[in-house]
Image (cartoon, rainbow, N blue to C red; front, top):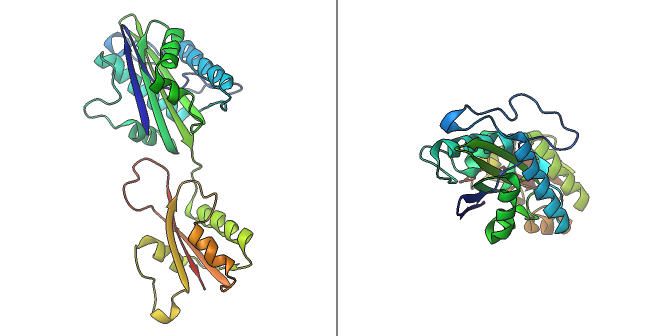
Length: 274
């Protein structure tokens, strides 16, 4: 997770996603709501947020980096924090009693394994964008090839524009069955090992850090547990075992991740080879 805050005279920069949907998308009530007037900010400035979004993608195109997609959940998280900034006055990435960037994005329903944030207060969308581009930290966030989606929010207060841009690398939300099917397909691509139709014991093994359910005589010849967010390839140790040709059956089980993963989308698996 990377965050950047910039203060240049009356301008402070921070990363946020577009306050308006991307091309071809229809704005729906609740995806980007208005803020109350007064110290909490005037109604959200969708045109300014949209301009920041477009300027970011123009800069990414010039730098040879892929276009960002609009993410409603990130926009919701950005807007909630933007309203808080407008209420507080001095900008920050986190206020008392508020979750951090990853926590806010996760609470809004975003699924990701990388999240970055820029925040700012300035006179215009163009001024905010230019300030981010001049600041090494903000520029790095905005042009990062590691992110592929964004949510931007802009709120007007005290005759200034408060802006938040939350960028993330999206991760597909999968059920346990979908995770198991994806890993089973990776195993099939690398070997002729048959996939067990019963994931029960593998799921139990996944949920613990050591051991395997049942008596010792029923234990597999090899057991691998790991956590990942992408599920694009098998762990090297598992691939090496499959390559030996010693095994004929694989049981695949998924379970909730262990450890401090916070709001980051992570999958935990166990594969037992027989």
